[in-house]
Image (cartoon, rainbow, N blue to C red; front, side):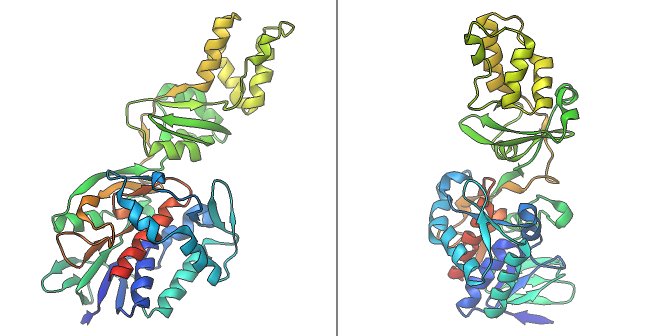
Length: 388
């Protein structure tokens, strides 16, 4: 059976849903094809089930891309306030957690329900459990499934990246881009926990579950947030953030005691220069178990001013060289993707193939942690939806 539409959207995640809504509102007959048994699986698991749906402080600097200027136009034309107005229209309660991050008060299901309702209102036709066998282009784009053939003059690829394969992530979007001769920036797992080498793991990983505020740095990037020790290495917001920028085998620097001078007490001549005194001070900056372990491994070699200065410096610049990340299984997003040089920053359409669009995570634009990737999905989806 052949079904004809004005536009076909492949992928029912955040970007695909927003694109469908914007195109449907403009009178386009839209078919949204999703290979899973439900829409928005990544929306539902995001933010611990509460969906960190945008960030009030969204700036182009919060995004990683081979062309750092590409996202500016897209982000400027659909802002966090635009999405917030949609959330408020549907009466969804939300709150700011930290650093401009907005979460649902209740559940991520509220955001997905809102998007589904907007699709219904816009007359979008949704097809779940739709496995795509082949995509061709003659006068129209033709999408072949086991039971149907879909045709339209416009095709939007919103199939996401490689992260979290257990909820259905595949390389489909990249494969399709290559089929049409488009360049791909090599993908890699971003916002991913780091794995430590055997020695570092034996030193620290039995402290799994211990969390502390740090500043994680690599090159010019630095993030002051929590770090979590895991059974295999390091995680937590600060580590996830820096993982997107880290280049193996270079070390990451971690300030374990930001804002604390742990040896300052020894400037007082009355303070005894002993391990127990230093332990008390270090425990003010670090969780007790981590402070004790740090001292066991890195205690000053003597109590001279020079040795204490070395200890202070090391505590604020722990150089750790991971052996890798936990990969796409644990990565929140995929960096890299369809080269932005192939796309119009106004429409998200390809420059060489009229009617073909790429949006969301499949494109080489990756947000930092904190709602930025959802904002990119809403903004890039809206840009393509309006262009349709």
